[in-house]
Image (cartoon, rainbow, N blue to C red; front, side, top):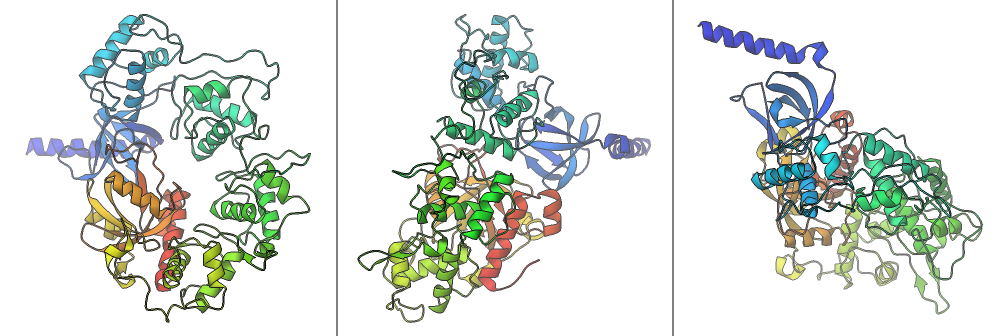
Length: 611
């Protein structure tokens, strides 16, 4: 009885300690390896969820062996030993037993210097331990086998000694020097020696952001947090500098960024929209692209609206609607179509010769009408006209909104099947010419529409469930309780009939997942039109209990994944219905974007409005 009472008192003390006001100064930490978040501070307590190594959590309080954390809608407890915090030097201390992306970066550098053989698998095992010890001995460091801030600072520096005894020259230090002929002004900044990416924090990130601001790529503050705006700025710089565009600031990117030859935004014609034979005006325009927020974007939007390419408000944020409008303008004005408002695109846009959206479909000298190509994700008055015609022929029941979404794509596909056209869901020249001709077959008059047999649809395609079988289920209340990490579930895209399988990695505010095989990746990307994008696509998921559920997803790989040989370097996110108020509090940006897509998809499918 005394033991039981003592245990009770200890538990109460732990809860009070972790819930005390003084302990609620929130900070962040990262999981060393796959980590259980439990309902209470006990090894026998129920598991709320399991997070992957390298995942960041919010720390609410710590007492002894247990830390109270918040992650993905869960608030619970995890072992303090399995959390790590960034050191002042900007590195996470790594040790044997850790398994996360930071270990993988460590291993890559050890392999590069000749201390480690094999692959960088992200698992800090005996071989990695021995490699760290060998590196520490060769470089005169404390030999403890722990890759702390001091060890990593030397490891990723240009002065790191390799296993052969030579000094590494792969990571340069300060790149300040002569600015003769420079296009970028000052060159303050030091190559950090480690790859900076989404989620990175610290002084190295702050320095990176300051340089991106100086060069005109980042319209934000240098807060030391590598978020979406910083990633977009890095990508913009990489594109301008003809580097691999991955949004990660590695050694090569940083070296050029801090050099005197770093191209400023708007100084190079290497990116942006160009047209053969086109000329630019005397005005220099900063390149504008997806993800940016500034007054120049707002001016761009206002001009696109005045020419009939946009119906949405001019907000200053370069989102999906703006990109679609830029692409439509580029097509109509015979520019390269990349969705980026570069020098030539803006020169044409602000000239007195810009062709408006209403003039895009014109007659040639032979009497044949030429149509601008319309596709998924675009928004314009041309799409409104197309939708009205599809409604008239019985292929659409949704309203004509001017946005080319899932319902419109499905209608175009159905029209193409019924009229003997190439079935790709893209409204190109042949499709629109047939649509506006007097011989277009209406939805109710063709007996040669889509076949119900999966074999006739082509590789990777199935007929799929009927719309009446698809449910709109709540993620936290109805979907997540039926799933667990490691479950395989099926996705069906009603717009293209492609289907593929995903494996669930972790279940937080959404389902972090990855394609099961390389074939699944291929069919998924085909459904997205052969591109990778963050723009949510409304699809149907067959969850483990056999129910088809409407959801939204993207196909851009990010962070880490578990499956080898699936041709997908990372994982993706599948979003299901959540309460909008809750989503705005906990996931106000990309989460809300997906919730809007889900609600729009459900309305297009059933006519029902979900608040």
